[in-house]
Length: 143
Image (cartoon, rainbow, N blue to C red; front, side, top):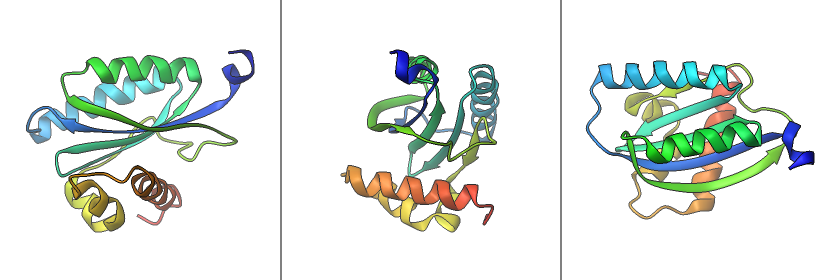
């Protein structure tokens, strides 16, 4: 793992919500995830639309492995689908332990991502492009 241990790794996944989320459920989930991400030097952006979570997470390979294990056993998610993991030269989400956009914000600010998340059969490449576009738009401060 030597070379990758200090590298920035980016991970994208999608999952289905295992229950209906009330506003207080989202607040608890976001609060806990932000605290955990901060402690593990991870940055991320989480989108929720059409009962789907879609997330890009950035950090060390070791800490991404830990968060992936945490997501897989979380009672909030099921049908977790790994989309892509890649090494990147710099973080796309440098300032946020967890930035969150729910249904209305996703539809209003990221219509391409919303459209991809609403499809029952996901085109992995189109979904990754939509995620990256949304992250770029969000990180540029245009929202």
